Image 1 (cartoon, rainbow, N blue to C red):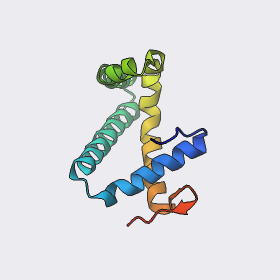
Image 2: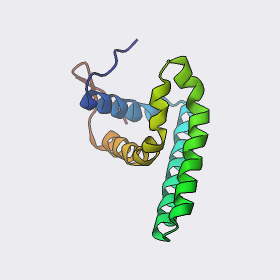
Image 3: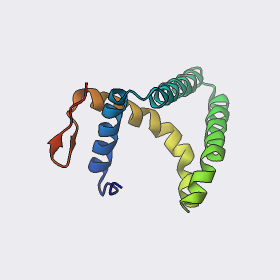
Image 4: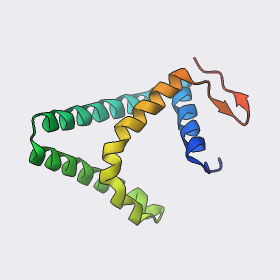
Length: 124
């Protein structure tokens, strides 16, 4: 068991550490999931940006709402299990923030040297 991070900095460092280690573990399933998640995130962001650039505000809102609704349905069992149903109401906001967060973790996993309990973790 790992203790939950108590600060945003610790949370981000944990995610960077996990991202940096994922590719080195050699787990084909985990790597496939990461790849699929990246493709979906890039596609969602690109389509949303395209709709906004074309000034199709209604289309952008419908697309954003549909993506949020699908994710709410998919994540609902998890939020019910951990008894955090109020958190799911933040899903539409998270949909907009997540691409930036994922990109930041990805870049940081390449640039930073992850540490754990004061020790540098060797990756790549």
